[in-house]
Length: 421
Image (cartoon, rainbow, N blue to C red):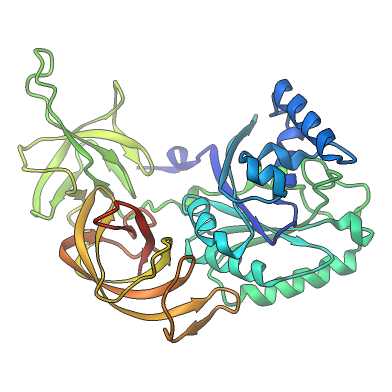
């Protein structure tokens, strides 16, 4: 089957990251303002708030600062999600904090993103926060980065300064696994190269940011080879109309499923063929990642929530021992021997942390021996032992079936996000 038409997605999820005061919120505000994605009452509120603060002009950063503490301090604390659209694409933006103490918030915002915008102050160049956010973007499997060198108006729109920072970042990128990196000189405050091109930077012959976002190709980022369908729910309507209906509902985490395909149910290993695929009330012939659908099979197979449907010649690994990279999210430090609930797709198991091998210094990207406790916002490599096998893939191969979260059994708090190695 030709999947090209199915996988040309018109929704782009992207995250913004950078150092404090690099202009992330201002950039998002400018994007939404120049694409006319702000309601009149929102604009009135922003103008009034800017006037109260004594700002010389309308402060577009206030559009994304939803928390009162953010508006008062002039910083981003939590992840703010914003939505806008152009005739060619829809966008979901995650505006994430730049402060190191909010690293976990950046991980949350970037975990579902296709693309990351890394902002760099044209006066300061590559900083520790630039390294940290670029490393986290790479760790989370983001394949596209746009480096926006902002505040070009404060360096007289200097091409030399732009090229200097570009060279500096390219040196950093050699240690990252990001295949697509683009550079754009901008002024979020003035609007240069954000939605429209810049007369001040005629030396730049590339597209402005919005056009670049519209054109970036993400269809190849989806895993079309490894068919993975974690079952979230077994549907038995028990009604006169659907008395014999038995469907399996869930989100496809990889590959393409067609009516008539031979499939295997895991962990039982029983095979069957797909009888029907339902998207809401519509019956369709094919389904692909990341659609949420209901499938029926030709045979009565014992399948429950947490099981996985795959292809017989391409099955996920079944494992009880996991090597993972963990981003620790909790105030209580990680402890070797600690027991947690491990949640993976629609499945879960009890898990114990056998060992923590090393921490990553997210500023220098170097590995550190674990001489001290792993604290909130730290990233480390750990070994987990599970109470039962899970059907997994490497995170680099499939973000959906390669990720886990750890949950505290007593408080039910999510304490860590993990990527399976």
